[in-house]
Amino acid sequence: MFSGRHGLSDAERARSQRFKVDIELEADLTRASRSDQIEDTIDYRQVRAIAKLVIEGESAHLIETLAARIARKALQIPRIAAVSVKVTKRPASMRPMAGAAVVIRRTRR
Image (cartoon, rainbow, N blue to C red):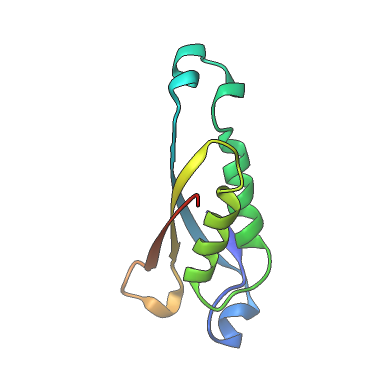
Protein backbone atom coordinates (compact mmCIF):
# COMPACT_ATOMS: atom_id res chain seq x y z
CA MET A 1 0.00 0.00 0.00
CA PHE A 2 1.12 3.49 -0.86
CA SER A 3 -0.30 6.84 0.14
CA GLY A 4 -1.16 9.61 -2.27
CA ARG A 5 -3.43 12.58 -2.90
CA HIS A 6 -5.60 11.59 -5.84
CA GLY A 7 -9.27 11.92 -6.73
CA LEU A 8 -11.86 13.98 -8.53
CA SER A 9 -12.75 16.34 -5.73
CA ASP A 10 -10.60 18.82 -3.87
CA ALA A 11 -11.64 17.05 -0.65
CA GLU A 12 -10.22 13.74 -1.91
CA ARG A 13 -6.93 15.37 -2.82
CA ALA A 14 -6.75 17.40 0.41
CA ARG A 15 -5.51 14.47 2.46
CA SER A 16 -3.54 11.39 1.78
CA GLN A 17 -5.37 8.17 0.90
CA ARG A 18 -4.18 4.57 0.65
CA PHE A 19 -3.78 2.90 -2.75
CA LYS A 20 -3.02 -0.75 -3.40
CA VAL A 21 -0.99 -1.56 -6.51
CA ASP A 22 -0.67 -5.02 -8.08
CA ILE A 23 1.68 -5.47 -11.02
CA GLU A 24 2.09 -8.46 -13.33
CA LEU A 25 5.01 -8.52 -15.72
CA GLU A 26 5.61 -10.53 -18.87
CA ALA A 27 9.18 -11.22 -19.88
CA ASP A 28 11.43 -13.94 -21.19
CA LEU A 29 12.97 -15.21 -17.97
CA THR A 30 14.65 -18.29 -19.44
CA ARG A 31 18.15 -17.03 -18.73
CA ALA A 32 17.30 -16.09 -15.12
CA SER A 33 15.69 -19.46 -14.47
CA ARG A 34 18.94 -21.14 -15.45
CA SER A 35 21.47 -18.76 -13.90
CA ASP A 36 19.67 -17.79 -10.67
CA GLN A 37 21.33 -14.38 -11.00
CA ILE A 38 19.60 -11.01 -10.46
CA GLU A 39 21.42 -9.59 -13.48
CA ASP A 40 19.46 -11.97 -15.71
CA THR A 41 16.01 -11.03 -14.52
CA ILE A 42 13.86 -8.04 -13.63
CA ASP A 43 14.77 -6.41 -10.35
CA TYR A 44 11.35 -6.14 -8.73
CA ARG A 45 12.66 -3.45 -6.40
CA GLN A 46 12.74 -1.18 -9.46
CA VAL A 47 9.10 -1.94 -10.21
CA ARG A 48 8.10 -1.23 -6.61
CA ALA A 49 10.02 2.05 -6.72
CA ILE A 50 8.07 3.07 -9.84
CA ALA A 51 4.72 2.35 -8.17
CA LYS A 52 5.77 4.28 -5.07
CA LEU A 53 7.00 7.25 -7.12
CA VAL A 54 3.75 7.46 -9.10
CA ILE A 55 1.35 7.03 -6.18
CA GLU A 56 3.25 9.36 -3.88
CA GLY A 57 3.95 11.83 -6.69
CA GLU A 58 1.95 14.17 -8.88
CA SER A 59 -1.76 14.23 -8.13
CA ALA A 60 -4.22 12.69 -10.60
CA HIS A 61 -7.99 12.76 -10.82
CA LEU A 62 -8.35 9.13 -11.95
CA ILE A 63 -6.88 5.83 -10.84
CA GLU A 64 -6.76 4.99 -14.56
CA THR A 65 -4.16 7.73 -14.94
CA LEU A 66 -2.08 6.31 -12.09
CA ALA A 67 -2.16 2.80 -13.57
CA ALA A 68 -1.14 4.12 -17.00
CA ARG A 69 1.76 6.11 -15.53
CA ILE A 70 3.05 3.04 -13.70
CA ALA A 71 2.71 0.86 -16.81
CA ARG A 72 4.50 3.38 -19.03
CA LYS A 73 7.44 3.65 -16.63
CA ALA A 74 7.63 -0.12 -16.07
CA LEU A 75 7.93 -0.74 -19.81
CA GLN A 76 11.12 1.33 -19.79
CA ILE A 77 12.81 -1.46 -17.83
CA PRO A 78 14.75 -3.82 -20.12
CA ARG A 79 13.28 -7.32 -20.51
CA ILE A 80 9.69 -6.31 -19.70
CA ALA A 81 7.54 -7.12 -22.74
CA ALA A 82 4.14 -6.40 -21.20
CA VAL A 83 2.73 -5.18 -17.92
CA SER A 84 -0.65 -5.27 -16.21
CA VAL A 85 -1.21 -2.75 -13.43
CA LYS A 86 -4.12 -2.84 -11.00
CA VAL A 87 -4.69 0.20 -8.79
CA THR A 88 -7.25 -0.05 -6.01
CA LYS A 89 -8.59 2.92 -4.10
CA ARG A 90 -10.44 2.50 -0.82
CA PRO A 91 -11.87 5.85 0.22
CA ALA A 92 -14.28 6.10 3.12
CA SER A 93 -16.82 7.68 0.77
CA MET A 94 -17.25 4.33 -1.03
CA ARG A 95 -18.42 2.37 1.99
CA PRO A 96 -19.88 -0.22 2.21
CA MET A 97 -17.90 -1.15 -0.93
CA ALA A 98 -14.37 -2.30 -0.22
CA GLY A 99 -13.00 -0.08 -2.97
CA ALA A 100 -12.74 0.64 -6.67
CA ALA A 101 -10.08 -0.77 -8.96
CA VAL A 102 -8.90 -0.58 -12.54
CA VAL A 103 -6.56 -2.84 -14.48
CA ILE A 104 -4.55 -1.50 -17.40
CA ARG A 105 -2.42 -3.71 -19.66
CA ARG A 106 0.28 -2.29 -21.88
CA THR A 107 2.81 -3.94 -24.19
CA ARG A 108 6.15 -2.83 -25.51
CA ARG A 109 5.81 -1.44 -29.03
